[in-house]
Length: 219
Image (cartoon, rainbow, N blue to C red; front, top):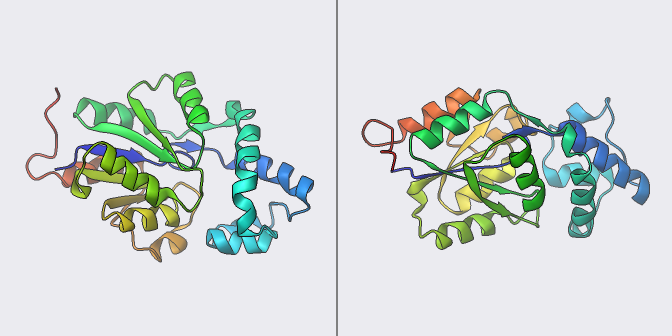
């Protein structure tokens, strides 16, 4: 039985594309990397993260060193991060049905908490940050261990191929959403368990996984 719904943050709960591009380009100009522009963004969305880094001239070993600076700049642009339409209703519905909600993201816990408070979302209290962009699988493993959860008690909702990879390493089901960063051609290569085209479909998929009526008893 599904008990916990775990969300990615950027691209899944919020639209932060403009902030991400703006912040990256600030760092790109500083460190002499290729910038993201209107004529290459669609192409970049077709690539894996490793391929994107190669195209932009960003060595993978430099990612950990740039991430802290990136998140500091991101924090200064939080006002431009937008809640995806329908997400507030989805969160409220899942909470009312008795699911425990959590976030596991590469963004910082401070940034996420600030956004949730500003948007009056008070039902997601479990927030885990993965400082390593490729280390989300280890954070998910820690999450499962901390709350003594079996993989079949958790569903992850994310928008990137690396979310799918991390979930499969932990044997948990993953719902890929089509409104985020990765396009379906990229995500499909990693074979998500489910695809959602709207927040309403996320709730429908989650409830379809329950053995009886698809709804937990509220405490």
